[in-house]
Structures are given as C-alpha cells and as structure tokens.
Length: 505
Ligand code: NAD
Image (cartoon, rainbow, N blue to C red):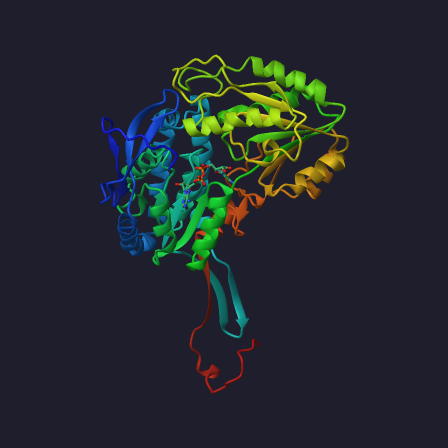
C-alpha cells in the first residue's frame, strides 16, 4: 500500500459476491481518494485469503448451471448488459473521473473501448464453434468442441478501472466461465458498478464476483485450486510474479506488464500532425496509459522544429479537475505524483534539457489535488533513469538520432515491447519498420495503436508474460479449451480385436 491515511467518516466499499454486497471478514481497509481534491472519499475493504476463497467457492458453485445455460440465453443476458452499459456510461464515467482523475471525455473513451469487447463477446456462439470432419476413417467422424474452463481470476490495474476488466470478463462469461475480479485498490468502485449492472441485466448470482484487496487477496487467488486461469494487467515486476506463481500452481496465465513506448519520427513526417499526436499520446490521461508515448525518437534534422511545435501545443493544455472540461487531470496518488515529479531533477542531473517543467503549473482545481503539468525533456541520454524507467506520468522525452537504423536499434534494445509508432510519409520506410521492429503493437502515423476488439491486444518481451494476448481471438482461445471427439456409431462390421495403434483407412 502506498497510502496509510485511514478515515472512518466516509463510506465503506464492500466486495460483490453471489449477486450482492459481501462484507467479508477483514478488518483492514484502504483509503480511496479523489485525486482532483486530495480527499478520501471511501474506505475499501481489503479481503483476507478466507474472503477470497469464499468468493471462489461461490463462483465454483455457480459454474455448472452457467456452463449449461444455453448460448441463446447467455447471449440475451450479454445483450441486456450491453444496452444498460451503453445507456448509463455517463454514470460510470463520473465514477472513473472521481477515483482515477481522468477527464470526462477520456473516461467515456475508455468505456466505449470496453463496450467494443462486450459487442465482440456477443458473437460467442459463432466464435466458439468447433470444426467437424466427416468420415476421417470409414464411418468415423472427428469434431472439436470449445468448452469453458471453470472459475477464472482477473487482476486489474488502476489506470483503466473499467476498460481492463472489460477486456476480459465479457469474453470469459459469454464463453460459460464464472469470474472473480480483483480490481486495483486505488479506484475500485467501477468494478462493483459493472458487476451490479450485469446482475440487473439478468446474470445469475455467483457468475461475476468482485473481491477487493491487495497482495493477500491476489496471492490467495493465484493458488486456489478451483481457479483455472489468471488474467492480469499491471506493472512488469508484478506481471512476472503473477505469471510464475500462477503457472507453478498449474493455471493458464496471461500477464500483461508495463511499457516504454517510442515514437520514431522520420525527417519526411508531417510535423504538425506528429506534434498533435505526440501531445495527445504523451499527456492524455496524464500519461498514465500503458500505450502512452513516453519517448520521441527524432531522426535529425527534425528535432528543433518538432520541439517548437510540441511546446506551442503544450501551452494551450488546460490541467485541472476532470469534471471541468480540462484537457488533463491529476495523477492517481500524491506518492505517484511526487515520484513522477522527481524525474525532473533526475533529468537535470543527467544532463537533459528541461524544455517544459510541469511543476507549479496553474491548475483549475483544488490546491490539494495530485497535480503535475505536462513536462518535456530534450537531449535525454539513454543511460538516464528518465529514459530507462516507466515513469507513467505526463512526461515526454526527446532522444535525437542521426538515422532510421539508429532509432530502430534503440527501440529494439528496450526490454519492453508494448507499443510503438512511426511517423513518416514514406510507405517503404513504414513497411520496413513494421517488419523490423520488435514490438507487439505498431502504429503507422497512429500514436496509440490499441487494436480493435476483434483483433487482440498485447506486447512482446517484458510487456507480456505467457503467450496469450487479451481479447479478440486470443481471448476466446484463452477462456475456452478445445476438446477433440472421435466418434463411430456402432457397426458390427468393425468389431474384432486389434492391439495396434489406431490407423485410418
Ligand atoms: P500494479 O502492478 O501496481 O498493480 C496491478 C494489480 O496488481 C493491482 O490489482 C494490484 O492490487 C496488484 N498488485 C500490486 N502489487 C502486488 C503484489 N506485490 N502482489 C500481488 N498483487 C499485487 O500496476 P498499477 O500501478 O495498478 O498499474 C500501472 C501499470 O500497469 C503500469 O506499469 C502500466 O504500464 C501497466 N499496464 C499495462 C497494460 C498492458 O496492457 N500491458 C495496460 C494497463 C496498465
């Protein structure tokens, strides 16, 4: 836990288990802040291992009935959920802004990307169809079924409190699994809101459960023998830990980690479009996106002109309370804000040029909010912690290089491989880049290349542990297991003893 202040003058948020709030047995709580005011708005119940196990037992008990519920019925409940979520997305956006701090328009964008996955999951009867081969041997047919796994666990990060759970649970549930979601303790209310909405849509009790907590709850989820699979999104050290621990316990795991995303700008790029993209992708959501651009690799001679254009645009950005029509909100906690701000001193010490210092910026919001304005560094050394660390805040670094190859080599040397983008008007260079770059998601004149719901999302290297990406076809594959059936309807002509390995004829 990063914050230790606990106040009792605010409501307690409980877990959601078996279709209703669940108090659990824990006496530990964690404060939930409004980052735009700095005030504690809720206390969050932190589950014990016993609370977590109780939720898994509920999900396990709900599984047989849900698995055997017809696809038509499951689809109709999913459709109701889609309609309710679409109709009430404004309410959810308010919750996101109040606990994460992102501005209202950005919160709505997050929900709409999540809705896309619900719409994709509506196609589950088609997506989970098996194959059929007739007469593979005389009178023998082979076909495949895709079946749900059972109880699946989801562990999500603070930066997309609605979208990341929505990457996973609609597909898991549409495929017939039951779910225990452990959201981030920093902005937990969206998860309860989504679970309650799904109940209203007709989802049977116990199919979708939310358990709040920290390491104690996560560790219990990772080793509970009734949990078949773990889907995780968060920082790289925790992703690695989740992958190793859950795999050792015999579960399937998809574990998406952190990032350091580079934008390569070639000399022929349209620098106005590039500057717009850099500002949007660097400072949107206060840089707290795993697909945020944090490094601009400028192939000379474009750096000076690009920096001028970016700086001009930064001057117009309004920072403040996300409910007031600002461009950028606060950071998630005071501790995180202070850590991000400390990189400004690191940059100076390491010889970078601080082009724009986000400290002390004028803000449209309360004095105690967790503010830091957009910050820009030039001449960043690749040996500096500013370049190496995932800062996860409104900080853009410029690294100047002489050639395309030098820029490509830099990107490929990164231990992360989540997203990257190239800005150019040269189709041949872009095509070469998409082939040569060692990154899982690539944008060509697109700064945040998050794939649509019917493709899959995930990085390479330390940005994803395991081999399963999120949502899209990879999500269907992850949340189902294939069974191959070989069938022969009895025919007396095929009797007789033969101990040899079956051959087809
Ligand atoms: P985090 O790793 O601190 O927490 C993620 C989840 O893990 C939370 O639910 C948290 O409670 C739990 N957790 C934290 N420490 C734990 C521990 N020691 N043991 C067990 N569980 C623990 O991440 P965060 O700060 O909430 O989110 C930001 C990070 O997530 C960034 O690194 C960002 O790049 C990454 N992220 C990645 C993607 C992606 O798709 N690759 C998407 C969003 C966010």
